[in-house]
Length: 119
Image (cartoon, rainbow, N blue to C red; front, side, top):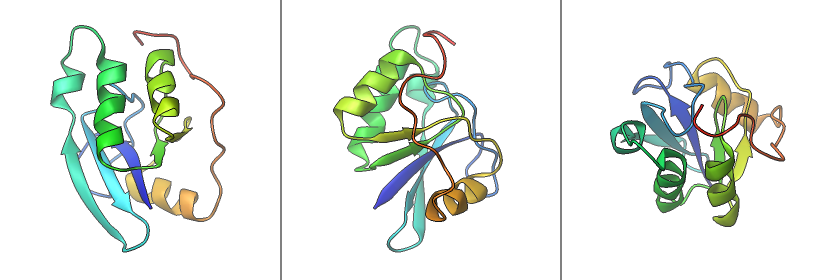
């Protein structure tokens, strides 16, 4: 299973980006084979409008089933939900710590957006 973590950098030691749609990068981590890839989010991060849905569609294309981030707005949350992607918000720390917390079942699934739109 693939999970996506918003990141300020390109390594597992990078800090989790508190923003979903405007995150610098997405780390796509495959739990089954302990591998990862980095997806540059510049296109969504620099978008004038629609960054949330655009970033959600990009995440959906990776095949991920889980998103871990600091915050997620309502438009992105709806698109992620429609794509069958579970969202976990409120995380801070490194990408590596987020992965471990997920594996240990320490994260709580979000039931809705954690911020208003255009955060």
